[in-house]
Each structure stands twice: as C-alpha cells, then as structure tokens.
Image 1 (cartoon, rainbow, N blue to C red):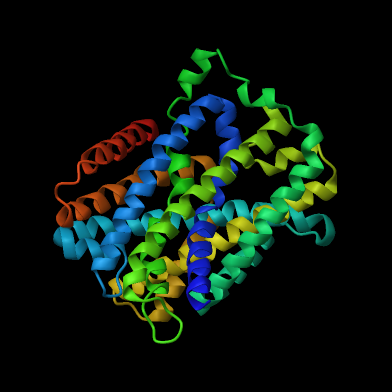
Image 2 (image 1 turned 135 degrees about the vertical axis):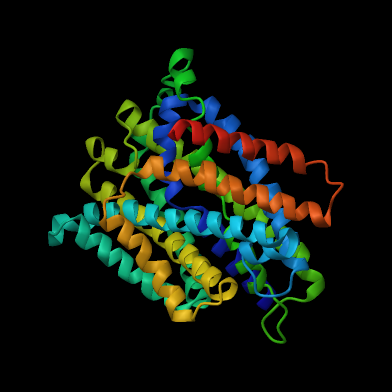
Length: 383
C-alpha cells in the first residue's frame, strides 16, 4: 500500500507538472498548421521527450547525491557543462514560472473580477502569493496538491466536454487542410510550444528523491529503477492524450475564433457557467505546475549553488514577478523561446551526460540533431 501511494504521488507530481501552461497554446497553434501536422509533432517530440526523460532518470539513479541538472552536469561534463546547465535551467524555469503568472493571473482575473472587481495585477499577485507560500513548504504539500489537482483537472475537463459537445465541429480541426501556403508559413511554429508542453525533465531528480529507500514509507532499491521508468513513461503519455483531447474540445468549439490562451474564446459560444468552469480548470492546471517548478528552481539555488534556503526561495519566486511587473507578458513567444532554445539545450546536455554512461547508445546523436535543429531555427526566428 505504501509503495502504491509513493508511486501515485510521484506520478501525479510529474504528470501534473507537465500538464501546465503550454496546454493553452495548443488549440491556437493547431488552427495555424492543422491537426495532422500537430499529430506528427506529438509523435516525434513525444518519443524524443520520453527517451530523454528515461535517460535522465537513469542518470539520477546513478548519482545518489542531492543534485539538479547543473549538479549532474558538473559531475559528467565538467565546469563548462555546469555553467551552461545553470544558464539554461535558471532561464528556462524562470521563463516557465513567468508564463504561469501571465496566464494563471489572466484566468483568475476573468474568473473572479465579475464578482469582486479588480484588475489583472491584483489577481496575478494573489496567484503569486499562494504559489510562493506553497513553494516555501516543500514537496510533501505540493505532491498532495498535484494529486488532487490532477483528479479535479480530469473531472473539469469531462464536465466541459459534456456541457459543450453540441458545439463541437470536427471540421474545425482541419481548417487549413489543403492550404499548403498557410501551413508552410507556420510549419515550425509548434516545435517550441509542444516541447515546452511535454517537458518535465527538471522534475526527474525530484521524483527520484520521492522514491528514495526509507525504512517505513519508501520503496526498495531493486524496485526503484523499474518504478521510475514506468512513472516517466506514463507521466508523458497522459499529457499527450490530454492535449489532443483538449485541442479537439477547444478548437472544435471555437474554430477560427480560437484565442492564444484558448479559454477566453469560449465566451462567444458557451454560457457563463461553463466558461467559469473552464477558467477554474485553467487556474488549477497552471497553479500546480507553478509551485512544483518553483520548488525545483529553489533547490537548484539551494543544493547546487549553496545558497541559504530562504534566499533561494525568495529569488525563485520574486524574480519572475519582477519580470511581469516590468511588462514581459507575451505568452506564446515566451514559451516558444523557452521550449525551442532553453529546453533544447537541456536536452542536449542530458544526452551528452548519458553518453558518458552509455557511449554505444545509437539514439543519442539523432536526438541531439533534433534539439540542435530546433535551437538554430528558434534563434533565426527570434532574430
């Protein structure tokens, strides 16, 4: 029973973190490139992400000290690798936390302002305060929230489907079918957001720690490797199926009126009750991911940079808020940058580290080429 509970907590922590703010960009992106292109992206990037996460899990098992990506890079790639890992991890997670603030605050504002008044800043600040408090208390509190948050997430998604199924038009998924000139102009748009929406590697060491052998509550050493593999595999597959269903649901309803953050476009089609339910679902999914990634970044500062625990917490939480206050609020460009460049760098670092322990694995180089190609494209795109 304890092993099952540990498995469920670890699974809900990883999959609940992966199902985050990237979800809300996908219907709009599918509108631009069509459903078949999105399916190809999910197959290629989903397979790549699962492999990289499994490789990182194996590295975590072979590195018993409390480390995060920069700490692993120092061991396997030396000082230069550690510096690159610090840069990519810190910028990437800061950017992800900022994305959660942008969209989560917007959802909370749309949900509560009709009843209580107030503007976007007030509700973003409320969202931030609750996230910062839970980040302060650590993984035990967060893992419980992730589990129940994931359950509520599925309940809300199913309720939205049954309330709105009469509005769904399957043809909306294929609005650009046959329009190659339109598809071509947006062909690489899905890369960064989809990689962002599937990535959970930063949480792999956290999950590995949750499975650490303990006399009363943990799992045995022999069980740990097998459990971690299944947790990683299931935790990536669940978001893929959820994302495809969410695209079908939102794009099927709103069609060409689909907005960048997905949910706000529902107001033109559904009643206030179902829209408020959808907004609650949006707050829920972004919030759980916000606190788990914030905890991970706090531990990068705490474990790897040897900062004081409370200072690490303060920098982790307040720097993204500062970026928001100075006006960085563009959602899709932000997650495109993080997914395509920062997470691509993380992926290459993990693969180079894995090569140190499994030099003959033939999958390493094709995966590096995928991430390297994505980085080059995104840099050219942003320039």
